[in-house]
Amino acid sequence: MNIEVSRRHFMKLTGAGVAGSALSAFGFSEAEAQLAAHVRPFKLTNTKEAHSTCPYCSVSCGMLVYAAPSKTEPGKMEVVHIEGDVDNPVNRGTLCPKGSAAIDFIKAETRVKYPMYRKPGSDKFERVSWDFAMDRIARLMKEDRDTNFVETNSDGVRVNRWPTMALLSGCATSNETGWLTYKLARGLGIVQLENQARI
Ligand code: SF4
Image (cartoon, rainbow, N blue to C red; front, side):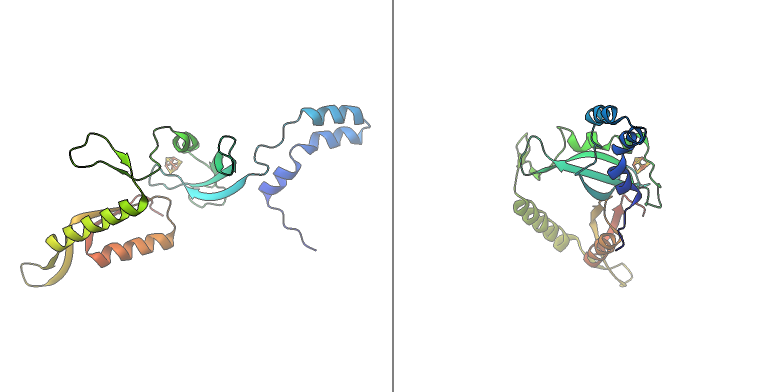
């Protein structure tokens, strides 16, 4: 039977055991036991790994994001570690200082995690449901498109432009999501389309 063990997985399995095994080979069983008692378990043991893309700049370095069961919210996972993805051809495992500190961005108290809405005349934002946010965005987009859509230019040539709307796509999207984003934007007639990631 073939057992496939990746380099990262191999390090997880063997990291804490190497020193103790060497001592055992020389007959230091007691010393091995004491050493083993003081070796901290590898911090990524029992974590869940996900591939992502750095959110900061258009280099779009690949990231590995590790999550473990939350200590404060039972039943939830929380990000415990981020590092460069060695298999990503953009950065080959490296991250600049900004990307290396991305976990601070994820855990920042000021990070916006939910749709927020400021009512007309209000001086503060309030949390709203995703349904509310999506309905409102769709309605405002339709109203604007109905008002400003340009079917033909001054020469009578059909152009189907929606010049009053712009779309900014996310950085952590896959090629497939990028393709769908492009299709949606161009299908609606949006001219100003920007995607942070250049991959
Ligand atoms: S790690 Fe640095 S260089 Fe790479 S995408 Fe993030 S901010 Fe840009």
